[in-house]
Image (tube, rainbow, N blue to C red; front, side, top):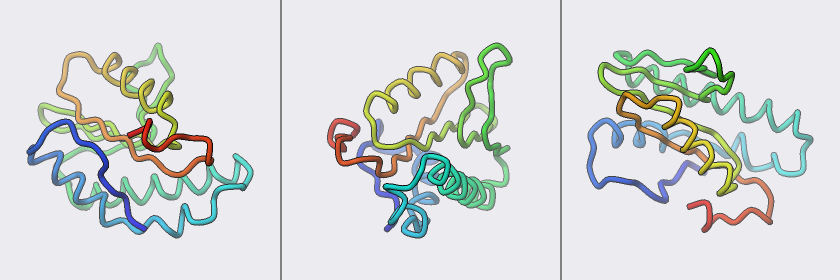
Amino acid sequence: MKPRLHAKSTEYNEILDRVISCISVIECSKYFESHIGKRQSDQKIIVKAFQNEVAENLSNAFPEIDWKIEFSPSEVNKDSIDVFGNGNDFVIAIELDKNRADQVAKKFVSRVALLPNIKIYFISLCYPGTDNMSKPECI
C-alpha cells in the first residue's frame, strides 16, 4: 500500500509533482494496515514513524530545501505543521491526518492564514480513521 493522489489543484507544477512522486513511493502498509482499533497513544507512535519516513525521503530528494518536523511558523500560535519545507520563494506544508474532511479543511485554512505572504504547497496525507469517516467527502 502506497500513498495515492486523489485530488490536485493544478495540472503541472514541477516542485509539487516532484514532491508527490517522492511521497508516492513510500510503503505505508507497515504503518497503517493494523493501526485501526489501537489506542490513540499507540496510533500516535505509528503516525510519528510515518512522519519521520516522509521527512527523511523528502530531505534526501530535496537537499536544497530546509525540512523540519513539527514546525511552528508562529510564536503566538503554538500550532505546528507536521512536515515543513522551506524553499527559496515557497514553502511546503504537509499534514498527516485521519481522513476527516473537517480536519483537512481546517488545516488548509489555518496554514494559509499562518503563512500569508509566501507561496504554499499544501499536501494533506490522509490515512484511514474509522468507517464513519467519509473518504469521498475528504477528497
